[in-house]
Amino acid sequence: MRPLLPFVAFTGAVFARVNIMLPFYVYPTQPDWQATIDTVNAHPNLHFYLVVNPSNGPTNSTPDPYFNYTHGYNTDWTTGVAKLNNLANAQTIGYVSTSYNNGKNNRTREAVIADIDNWSQWKEQQSDNSPNANISIHGIWFDETSVDRENYEFYQNLTAHARQAFNASEAPQYTSVLNTGVAPDPAYERELFDLADVVVTRETCWQYNSTENAAECPMPYVHYDVATLKNSSGLPNHTDLYPKASVIVHYVRPEPAVDATILADQIKRTVELGIHSLYFTSAKLWNMTTIGPATVGAVADAVDAAQP
Image (cartoon, rainbow, N blue to C red; front, side, top):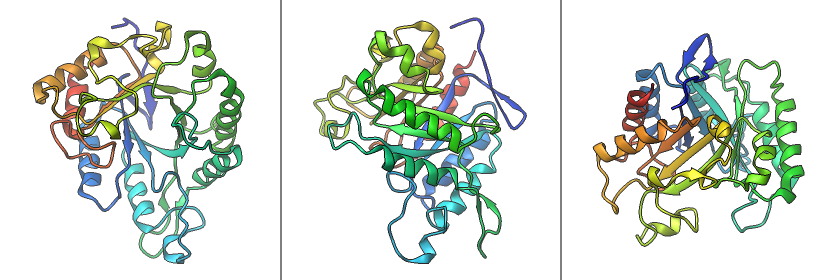
């Protein structure tokens, strides 16, 4: 653990340096949404980054005007986001796909820019149900980010555009996250980290890759064990970049064995690395927060208990 631990200030409060980075891909009317709100309220000393993702981004294609505000997905999402923005220690982040490291067709710069601009205009929802509700978004999650140096200019352009669109230099809070899922090459690492506030250097599953759920995990992958994290393999090569690194683990369920005690130990040891943030879930990807043992409440309890 580093002796000097920077903190994050938000709405006048000071939060522990190791934060919760929750890809919150849950529909707002599900009970998982309220469970997350309850967890945030129960842990005022933690800072929660909540990545909002209506449909692989902010755009809804339906022509029904009920589901389309000028900016804002539909009344369920805008009402839900307003609830998140009422939480003193939570920060809403907008999901944007870049499709650069998933083996599929890459998204164009124009398509990604359109999503960024859409998110930047989520500000106030005005409707009969919730007049003047705050639906603002406070950052961008760039999913499927490439770690190839040849794509540096693409991401440099996108992150710069996002900071301008969100007026980041004057905004009370703005965070950009690059989800590479793996640590970049050490020779390219600093350049990539300089583009964002946070880089996800390990996204993987708890389960062995021989389990039936393996196809849902980032492939190829090695199941998560904090003991296997090392420089350039799940962590930055340069240790001074640890405070900008994030670790995300899903399918926290057997095999190998896992229970509340094992989960808490893995989280404690991950926190002790001095990284920026983490999240563990027992769900398929991020579509639920209430499946155990890695419920949103259990994860927050463990992170809170592990703080220095």
